Image (tube, rainbow, N blue to C red):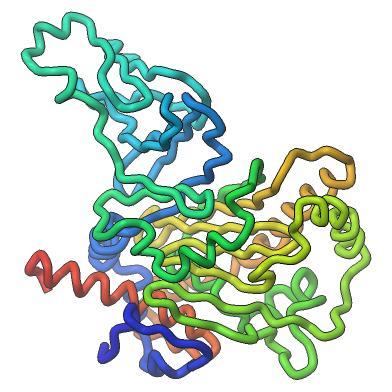
Length: 394
């Protein structure tokens, strides 16, 4: 490629990345996936949770990251600091826990009872004097972790600090009230599709009128914008944003209107009716989407499980508990709406993967309104090229 997509900072210039077709092999080839795994996934800061999941010392969450063959414990120590460690006993490698989350002050290996603290230090081990090593040398292996706007990120092989990695996006994230979130709802899905193909579905609105006429039709498109294209987009280095187009006179279904009106009193009380980026959609490289509007803080991440398989996590973050029946109704209905919309995407994404994997087409063609999709793959290609140059395999 003749341009460096990761160096670009631009707004509403749809042809800035060119119009070249994209090799289809990037979406199924096993050798290419292995390069991505090393060049992108092991070196990128990835969102793995939110500070509300670690409310007090001893709180922990476990994350399985298949691309790294790793199980990671993220925990809050006695000093209040958040740390991350491989969920691996330093004696014989046995995983310390299979609990998804919880609270405890120590972690004991079920095999030989080596016991570790929330700071990763080895506290005790039976007959340790016979091992001819030190407790300091046998502490849990740490994983670099950091926080921005309440979001917890980790990176196995960081090339730069988190804030430098996020660039101008860090300041934008800190302007939304996501850091104040105290609870969330989520659901996971596994899909037979490459992570980029899955991710791309949520970066373009070209499909809205055809795939989501019922769930997204009310405010998604209309006269003058029949495909519901975003009104603005920007490229911010390796990251990007787009602004959702606002219909001047949307036809809101009664059920959706009822849902929103039930949530308005709580939104007003929480100061969430006037947000700095109510229609802006953040796409953080490589795999995170974030939309913070008055109705919900919507977060979606996609992780690779292989060349043709990926896992998504969709979360809605909230401030405060469900104090009234109306608040509970609004939140449950919001999640159900998100699931309804997503259910319409799944079969289409799978069908796309089957077609690409067949080898029937050699290239993918992005039109100018799919610039976010083009930007993602071009940054991936650059990261792979940089990695190959570094290790001498280009």
